Image (cartoon, rainbow, N blue to C red):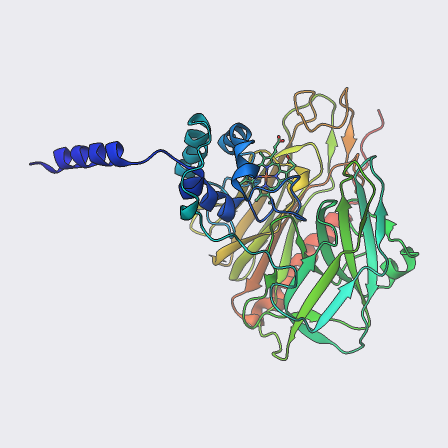
Amino acid sequence: MSLIVWAILGTAVLWAKSPPVSFSHDVAPLLDRHCAGCHHAGAVAPFPLLTYADAAKRAQLIATVTGARYMPPWLPDTPHLLNDRRLTAAEIAIFRQWAEAGAPEGNPAELPPEPHFSQGWTLGSPNLEAAMPEPFHVPADGPDLYRCFAIPLPSHAQHYIRAIEIRPGNPHVVHHALLFEDTTGTARKRDTGEGYECFGTPGFLPAHGLGGWTPGSQAITMLPGMAETLYAPANLVIQVHYHPTGKPETDRTSVALYFTDERPSRHLEDIGLTSNRIDIPPGQSDYKVTDHFTIPVDVDLLGIIPHAHYICRDMLGYAILPNGKRRTLIHIPDWNFNWQEQYRYPVPIRLPADTRVEMEFTYDNSEANPRNPNHPPKRVLYGPSSTDEMAGLHLQVVPVRESDLEELNQALWGKMMRLLGGGIYRPPQQ
Ligand code: HEC
């Protein structure tokens, strides 16, 4: 008999035999793997999705939000990013079939073991634990708050950091948090005890960014030989985005740092593709902001961090390799300010010398953009506050040869000077 006939027969037998989709056998493992990290008591999502009772009463809603790829939240449509949360078509079909079948429970004996959520630090006991000096009170309602908190570092000794974990004190109200190190003393001066307002940037030029936390994110571990230097004396600065929940909340976010004695032998550099030439007329739906940079030395690209505010829609980052080939580094077709993440590649991407990297962001300042905060739309200019816009695509690269670091730094310095030399863009008077 031909292979095809065998295949058809086989499928038919499987079809006839396969039992209907049930919670215990099919749905629970998917919830545990893809949803429970955010949907358990005390975590960010508004309700748990652990038990049959949790899920059965929302079967239809679960089918809808997974079918629309609204859940799990994941913005890029580019493959090959670490911790990609997207479901496969087959997984989405299971949620749909289960809802259509009336959410059957199945045999509870088939349930997978209940997932365990660590209350402590996932990497064990840290070398340095630091928390916001005081709990911060978030009112029941009102606009989202962006606050920076300075945490003086207790020791004057310099350290090398091999891993960082950020833990929101109250995940219901913390939308995301970013960690910086400030050696200028600015944040310490501005923080009079309950943090200071800081939408967009933390208000100083950080010695470096030390990663961030978004719901469902994990501890950040540096690659071997690439520890981050923690300078001293200095302040850690946590920038927290609070989203009021409808009742008064308090939060005290904390950080765990893990040190190593190993001096870094390779250094991470930030290639910032940015522009301050932003002046978006009301109603325009396809306003483009671009920037580019030619990398003078061979580098490995480890991660990529896109940043814009509310009305950015489409974010594209790509490389033109020296052989003329184009490679997409990240594409976000429908940007959402609420889900800012720092993306990493599971395997570094080698970009040979003379690769040109490009940023192209598209802004939709029309009434049709559901995330446009202005009705009717208003003219939007470059700036750090929530009513302004920004455009930033940060490429985290490491020179393949440490001896090339200086040349890369000089080229980046030249780029920054050109940006500043152009001055802050002053739009023509209306
Ligand atoms: C990274 C964290 C995270 C993950 C992972 C996640 N969720 Fe959510 N989910 C949220 C948050 C936060 C909300 C509430 C805010 C919102 O609706 O955007 C939410 C809301 C929901 C809602 C309510 C939507 C509505 O319109 O009321 C459903 C249903 C849901 N999630 C199902 C799921 C399912 C099913 C999965 C796994 C396949 C999942 N979520 C994975 C964070 C997450």
